[in-house]
Length: 500
Image (tube, rainbow, N blue to C red):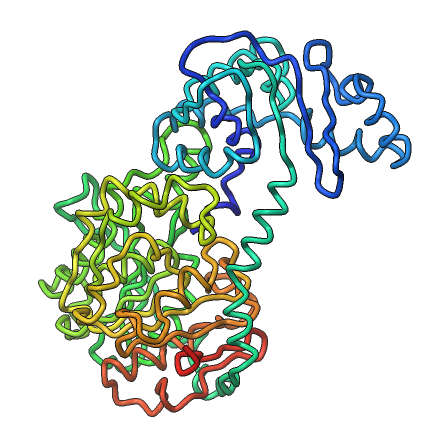
């Protein structure tokens, strides 16, 4: 899920959407800063301030602070308030109006930016109007936007950023403690990694599917040597693409697996590019249903001989691997039931102690959550890396899951943090802890566990994925999860399941 890495709307610009009103009002004339480490506020005059220096000149205390810091306050304000906004910002906001993902971003930011004198409206309409006015008046930056926001007084409470940072740290504390209590797996041997660079072939295919207007684009990674008759499907995350995970497929194919990597067109990298150009809205909740259907359609195509017919694959026992949203899709296919119950209750509270960045995405699924139970009994096992899952799934459906799942989470993942999205759902006694396993990647984050095609380092998780699938699909191979030897020297991997 490239939710933050490449989604470049400035955070404060999005936050201002939480200020928007239902009825027109005069523009706010005061801007108040609450800064971390200071016990006072700085009130600034917006009516005559067009530059960072003019803002500082409107407050004697801020002038003194700027002098004491040798101009540091001015540099901060210039970077924060007068840096140009991307030209496409207005188009992006207009495309996102009323979209659940955008509304969740505004709710999350509502504590950071507050306005007195207006009722709150998170539709984004007045934000779009304020942006248009700022560009019209040749003020294409955050200060210009602030000067056109209706209301009486705007408060930027930057101390909230410290609160968010502390909450994120707490959401990773349990995982870090579990790592300290567990011995890392032995690093993988060179013998297992043999063939990573040459034991596979690569092709691209298009497959017509009933649920999409256009054919599904698929990257096919096939074994060059003997096939073991098994099929693996790898599902990418939000705003990503198959190439980010081909390293996993290369090792699997070198050991005899045929691998398919579909491009999910409603939420892939191309969709993100269109969004950032102001041409499309964010992905709809319908993608929650369509993504697992993409995988099922590919299994159907293999079973019908439309794909990989030369390998005589067993389509009654398939493995699915996914990252981020792709991992959520793998859980759906594994038999975990989706529900809107928790989404409806917890998505409106920006101060929820378990709230994390992945909740922006999960909460955008509310409208489609009750149609997301799409189990495919042919999926016998899954490896799910960094899945957003806490709010979407009904844990009571765990014992009925037909597939055994390996969940992998990074201890430094600030997009999908380990504690609320991995450790808590698999705690001892929880219904989801029904023979599944959880491995923590010490130092792993949301982006360094990928396996892109052009990576300089061997893929961290590929041996682990291979070992798990070998064991669960009963492949004739001595390299198995229970035997160990799937670890990594650079990013230690630890099976913490017995510690839960």
